[in-house]
Image 1 (cartoon, rainbow, N blue to C red):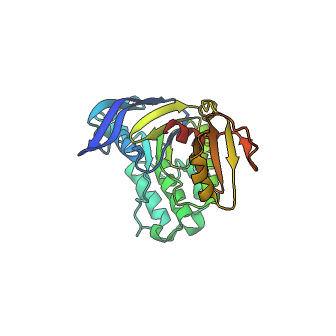
Image 2: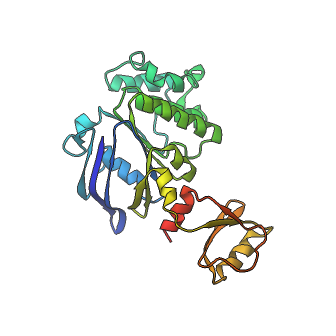
Image 3: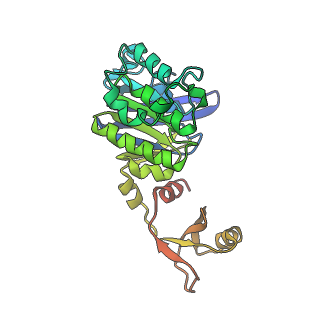
Length: 286
């Protein structure tokens, strides 16, 4: 459904994307995982025909993103990272507007958005600008789906959204996948990676690994340990000076570390743990 070949993009002297290549299969949830500034939004804008790449080629649903851009826009849904609907229009008016643009009606494709829209339907006469973050997210997704796109692009859809709404959102994506919609989603949240069929890890405009979440974790070759103390910052400095420690990073209330050689002495509260995608991301970018 999506094929990207050697895409490059620069903004003046800033390299945004470097030789990006990957493909996404029909009905797949494909995650683009990386921090802010990694190049995720630039890539999405190229694939949705909003900006041009400096070099390389890309097709979405068999359509060239440059040559076939007019036809392409009929086949995709795009939910940008920033809420971009008409804030002075009501919930219902926004949805009606987007349905009309694509020569369809709310009734025709209501089955696609029913599970999403029913959460905000009691507020259908409220202006979009007055909605909470979670409600704005659901409205934006409803508008992106109302014309039944073949491919759905979601650029950091859960950023700034409460944990309950994040969970509900990913449950919705699972249901959309069952309807045959191909979904490509970008996120800085590593814990969301495991909810995708496959993920691409991106940093500084480069993709350095594409695999299933399970196989990404399997690539972590070292034993990983966790430790915590009353002063993790002091412990972090101490461990980074230890010649036997290979890497150590702060993870919430604890530190995650690997060793060049396992220490002979017993270290209190040190326990072996299973790595996560975030551990792998850090290890790959050392």
